[in-house]
Amino acid sequence: MTTYEILIACVAVTNLSLTVLALLRARSMAATSRINDLEADLRRELKAHTAELAELRAVTQSALNYDHLAEVYGDLKAIAGQVHQLVGQQEQMNDLLRQLLAQQLRKA
Image (cartoon, rainbow, N blue to C red):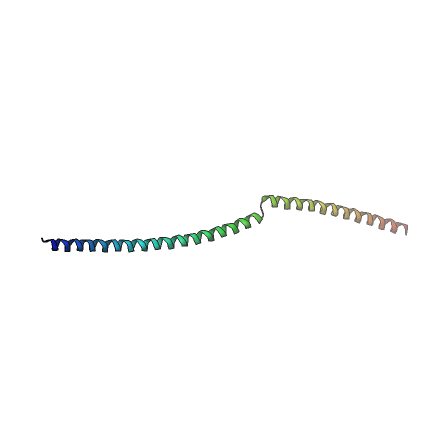
């Protein structure tokens, strides 16, 4: 082989190497672009989930729990006691009115 042929072979090998490197670089850039797009999508989804979790936390903090139910039950029990007391007083008033009416009828 002559020097010229060796030089042509070296240029061809170099050209082939550069072509392969260019293809690998293009593939790498495409993969990097896809990864960046996926990362951006994941960040958007994460922000949406974070906002949704914050809303759910706010709702659960304002929701009724067992302490609230215990307070309501205690209030209902107190009101029931007052109602029973008022019913008893009304029955006493009815009995007194009957007695007064009976006394008035006896006198007349």
